[in-house]
Amino acid sequence: MTTRMIVLNGGSSSGKSGIARCLQAVLPDPWLAVGIDGLIDAMPASMQTTAAGIEFAPDGGVIVGPEFATLQAAWMEGVAAMVRAGARVILDDVFLGGAGSQQRWQQVLVGLDVFWVGVRCESAVAAGREVARGDRIRGMAVSQAEIVHQGVVYDLEVDTTHTESLECARTIAARLGSSAAPDGSAGG
Image (tube, rainbow, N blue to C red):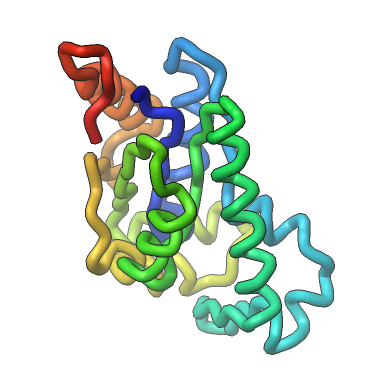
């Protein structure tokens, strides 16, 4: 079995999207990049104005309601279906529930070879990126920097505090290449 899915988990503004774009450039085969931001953008605006949807608190906290959870579960199944149908997928996600979030993905991705990558960034650096981006609520990066990694098990961790996205992508790509076993199957 070969790896057809790479999961990048990290807090807001940690560099996941940049790494995903760089992975698309350095990996030899075409990979789709999908992320939680795309799911949120695809939802009606009303999902961000009700407790049943997703709320972004003024301090950067994120509260997920039951309607959001239902749509997210369907989206997760759809991502897994793309991989099962033959697509290679790089997932850019924020595991607000730490290990619980990873477990939900593991259940959906059962039987697939997944490469789990923790994307870390010092909270002060991520907070600076957050301000520079201008499209995030201040405090989100700091509040998520550590909690998203709690209890999560990775095949590899990268740190974008002082390392550029391209170098992180090259490290991931090299590790993917070296995870192939002598029989041609992939580890992970």
